[in-house]
Each structure stands twice: as structure tokens, then as C-alpha cells.
Length: 370
Image 1 (cartoon, rainbow, N blue to C red):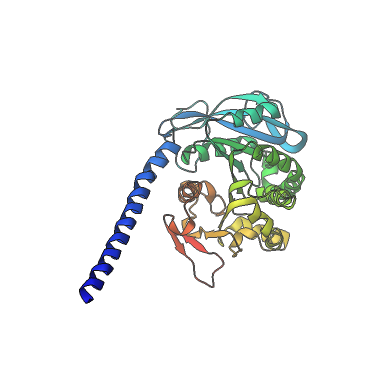
Image 2: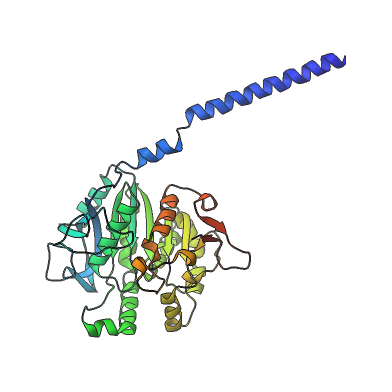
């Protein structure tokens, strides 16, 4: 009797084990390797100097030069009618990560260069994005005191260094200042003017975002600094109107945005996107200065927000080329781009390289290790 019971138990276990082994083998045989998936996604290795298309939408008033993308192309005041087009940008293979030194007369492998501009209207612009072979689009919105040419170069650098397979669009609102000494010295005046222009651009950006999210593509939105004044209320309003998950990844870098106002629209922001990632730094002197000017803490100064992956990057906040020290431009550096690369692949935050959990009493959820 005991022998019969023993045999039946082992037979049942053996059948269960064989069934489990069959399921595992089936899953393994049907699931492609991760490496193969990444290789399929990244069609271009971006390992040589390349001329890239950087699509632009700008509400800057057009200036004297209408066929290039340099500092004389678009200015610092909002135009009622947005301008659309493509900047052809030479991305040097030997550039240091984060550096966008421009010189059209030097070695193309060492310096960024502008190679022309193609102007379009809104319909042609959207058709070009829609016809792209890739299903992904990365939209970049810059921050305070950034001229049009710098915004375009930065978008090109981000596309190249991320090996991003889809189209990259820079939405350039009228930030920046006159290049003269007076304009450079009047930082407070420039900040106030840029802040006003950012708020004026909320409605045009919402229109642009409605158009581009209607193409059926996977839209990743990357924002920096004061650009959040343009983006966040626009995204929240679209979510309030009933649109949900119209963004894939919403990536917020050093948001110069009132902390309390951010919390008020937080539920709408999380409704808008598959995931929200916020890179913060308590050592960001630009945000510290903004807090003094605006009289309120900024969202990018490291606070926990429900439904948001808040990552403190203070440890890796090294100024580009060892120059400077505002601690505000880390979004285009190697450590942050390495993490964003994994974000765009869909890797969860706790499984990404160089991420550790933060302490329970700290403002952030995670820390990006040096």
C-alpha cells in the first residue's frame, strides 16, 4: 500500500515537472534574445560622423537668415504662426559627450556644423514624421536662455549619443538673450522675459503635441529646466480633456517649476504617460537661484512624487569639460544619457545600471551612482 502511494506521488511529480519543462522550453524558444531585439531597434550604429535631420517647430520670430539654422535665424520673441522645418546637422564622431562646439570651417569629425535648412509647413512636417520607418519619436524642449541654434545642436547630440532610431523634433520657444555684453549681464531681466515667453507658449505647444500624438507613433517627451513651464501645464490640460497615455516616456530634467503647482497637476501628468521620470539635484544652483526669484521651491530640487521615478543625479553632476558649476546641464551628459537610453528601452528603474535606492528620509526615490 505504501509502495503504491509512493509510486503515484512520484508519477504525479514527474508529470508536473515534465509539463513545467515543456512550458519553459516553449517560452525560451518563442522569446527572442534581448540583444537581438536591441540590434533590430538600432538600425544605425552612429559610430561615424553623420549629417542628421533635426526636425524643428519654433514659435520664435524669424530673423534675417531664412536658409540656415544659426543664431541669425530665429529670435527671442513669440511669433503667432509657428515655423516648421528640418535643420541638417553634422554630428562629429569625435565630440566629447555633452559638448556641442560649432565651427563650420574646421574638421567635420571634431566640430558640429550646420549643413542647411529645409522649410516646411505644418502638414508637410507631420507627413515627414509619419512616414518615418521607425515607430518612435523623441521630442526635446529646451530650457532658459537657450538660443535656437543651441537647441537644434543639442537635439542632434542627444539623437546621436542615444543612438535613437526614430525622428527627433526640437520644440524651440523664444528663450535666450542678446549676444552683447549688456544682454549677458542682465540675467534677471532675461529670466523674467524667458519666463513670460514660456507661459505664452503653452497653447501653441498643446496644439503641436495634439498634432504629433495623433500620428499613431510612440512619443517620448524630454524636457529641461524652464521648458517645463511650457510643457507641464499643456500636458496636464490635455489629460484633463480626457486624453490618456498619449505619451510613452515623459522625462523631466531639472524642472524649474513650482513644487506646489507640480503636485496639483501630478495626477494628470501620470495619466498622460506610460511612465514619468524626473532627474533632480539638490546641488542645482540654477534652481536654487530660481527659488529665490520665485519665492517657492522648484520641482527639480528632489522631492518624492507619487507615480514618478525621482532620481537624484547630484553624484554624477560634473560640468562638461570640467568648466562651469551651475549643476544644471546634466541632462546631456554621459551618465544621464546612459540612463535615458535604458528608459527608452523600457527597463524599470530598479533594474537599470548604476541605480541605487535612496534612504526613506531623503527626497528622491533613487540615486544615480558615480
